[in-house]
Length: 151
Image 1: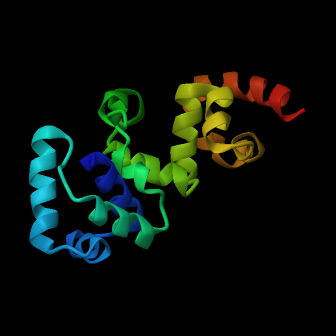
Image 2: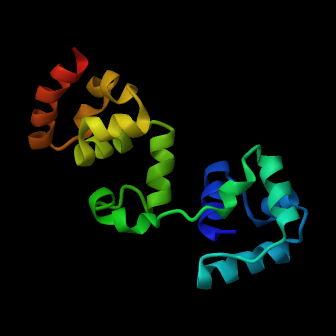
């Protein structure tokens, strides 16, 4: 399984090594071993039964753990330029919770079309609430576009 997937799920669900071990019905030492091996290779050789138990416990499809995900680190510069978010995982979590500063940053960088493709129409519906977090020059451009998207 791919370690980044396990890390992302653990981060978003607030799980630690002991929680992952309990869900997969393995020892905490095994989870530690997963993390050490995964840091070197990106993937971990583990039993299918452990993956299935973890997936069922989390109510997720088992194949989610086996799909290679793109590394988010390449997006650090456009989204994490001011250290408001310590890493891309924190930024993505803030987006999933629809935190206004994160949504504003996404719209500032990607625009309405791509942002609404990722987060839905609420990006356009709630523009008035988060536009104050967008840099002034970009905000003016987006306000013009927003009137077109909102109509």
